Image (cartoon, rainbow, N blue to C red):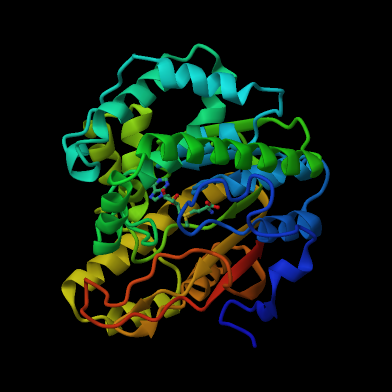
Length: 407
Ligand SMILES: C[S@@+](CC[C@H](N)C(=O)[O-])C[C@H]1O[C@@H](n2cnc3c(N)ncnc32)[C@H](O)[C@@H]1O
């Protein structure tokens, strides 16, 4: 089928096209980052389009999957994200594998009496008061560690176990309390929960070490990596040209990244005021200066949406994402790969891929094709009832990789 932008659509299953054992293999799944790329998409792109010495760029990098895969294929990369956790996740997922005495680190942790109290007014809402003095000590040890390798090794395991010891319902994508999570904590309180905490921590460290071993089997190379975490991609510029932009921009109805990560960010030492400022910059729930969207499909949809608040969301989304990408594309010399879902609005699926393809074709890019992949393992934000419309949303069933080439 041909779209208005000229490119063909093809159905694919990225998981079958690339030889990576699973979507959570190696260090690709150490942390549940919402709407994370499956590594196969990036591997497919690099295997089929990249040439030696190309530089790769992702302005909405999230977990940093683009970087992890670029390293395996030997490409330099630059990653940006509003979420400061990118820096931590990337450092852990690419850390060297060294011999470590896990038991000795854990013994030091157990006997430490340093304290760290997060700058977070609601921490006693999210953690039961019985656990808090213990968590202050665990994190006090973490923050006082001089051994940077041990610190890195502890980071993700501690974040995961601390979350398990909170009222967050981890099955949901948003930070939220539920009867299930309250029951989990009530049951923990009846047991030797400190022992459980340390057992879980040890298991998580083992899992991380196994992930690092697997990543090493994929032969990552020493490439140049630039990581800019906690930045607003709408307002910063690239210092140098990049050959390929590969990205999965935020979703039309998701503002949840900072909110989802904030518990972790507080324990890592971020302040409430910093988190508040970052949340205000998330696309699409922020006001953005209008930009010219050069797409017929966009304008058809714009007139179709009657409700003012939805119109605002719709425009802020496209002005935000396309505003940023249109500024950044000037420094992209060969290809852009945009991986997007169809989010529904008023019960209809918005063809975001088509709008992107039309817009960039009007700017002189060639729309090579759009590859349509069925989502199997990618964890999406899902809403039963959309809070903005009161209408039942469809789960995004497929995701599209829009491939654009410089003329
Ligand atoms: C779909 S996710 C990207 C996931 C990523 N592909 C991965 O593999 O984990 C979109 C990202 O856009 C980021 N984001 C939202 N608003 C932003 C902004 N103004 N500047 C930079 N990043 C932003 C979110 O923090 C989120 O990580």
